[in-house]
Image 1 (tube, rainbow, N blue to C red):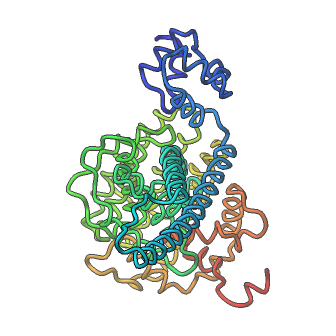
Image 2: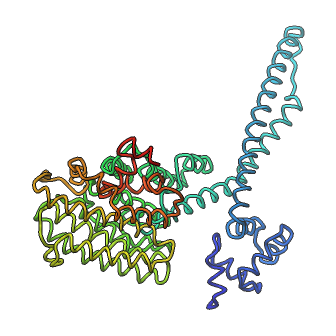
Image 3: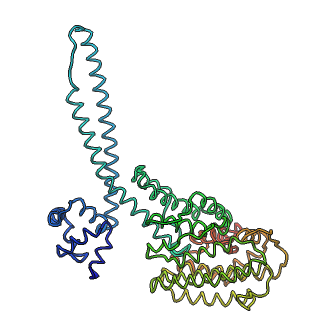
Length: 497
């Protein structure tokens, strides 16, 4: 089947090769043709007879591919109401049945006492039989609806996975929570065949908790929380289906959010499993994995050559990711990973008191950051709307990094990293030692960058009071002055707004 129409039909959810061949033999080759033939119940029955398949198969195909999201949601709500009504009906009928049984037993006991030599034998009352049949019918209805509930749960989880994106912060906070996880578990109803779906839903809920804990956790606290969850989701050595691919992607994201606080895996995960989606790329995941491994290294002079060597590999992986994405907005995640890895390398060099970035670059850290910020600003301007927010917030980190490098140069020896301290631990100690954060937070350069990042993220009103600003600063240890300003360094800041 070489036509594009055949490929279009083959991509439908629930489609297999046998059904595709039957549709082709029936002269149905385009998605629009199939939709018109299965839009109405009578049309579905007629087509089912023509194809020699069950009407149920076409009903499921129509539900998964041609119903609008709001129609699916409405049907799900109807299903919930039916299930709730079934529970109420069953409970009511059970109470009536037990009352009838008790009455029957009491009457039989009295009759037995009166006519002890004439045993009374009788079948159950007709009312009990009718109620039992009705309960059995309701249970059959629930069992028939369960496949639709499972399909709806799977579609919810996969839609949430689509918001994970090709880089942390691509789409903002995850639209998932323990409420959605409970809804998925209720729809699946404890069926062990769907444990991978439940595991992915639980991982999404925990990742959302790491990313959306309000103002209660610092970046170090969030990194520790993410690191604690990594152990709960073991690595998938050989991904076999889309749920294994979800597990690989989510575990990589947990490791990225841990900012180096988790021990290295003996082997890198099979990041090519993420090729199951069009919105991410194994190249971007490889860049994320490389950076997570660099962040786990202690901030010592011996680690700088490894940083320098790995930056080249991150660039290669990001270039592969950009090539795979082509003209899609996700291709601009390439600039995110390249500029973020270079930013962190320059900060590590500054923390160690280096005056240059050899062998990676001949410039001093401050000059290098200014040059890379210019490259990043150019990428922000060229990127389509969906690709701009993560790049714009990374530009805020560049402005903060310049201020940090200046502070380190003016305060040599103020912070002495422990021998095994990693990236996030050292930055947490630096943030506690700095006394210039209020001035940096009110500088014109930082004000302009935060305003631009908030605007590109869809924030209306004051950027410093926006939840998106707090969310970004809670995850990024370099945003020290931005975080202090957003959380309100003093009562006067709040009064001014």
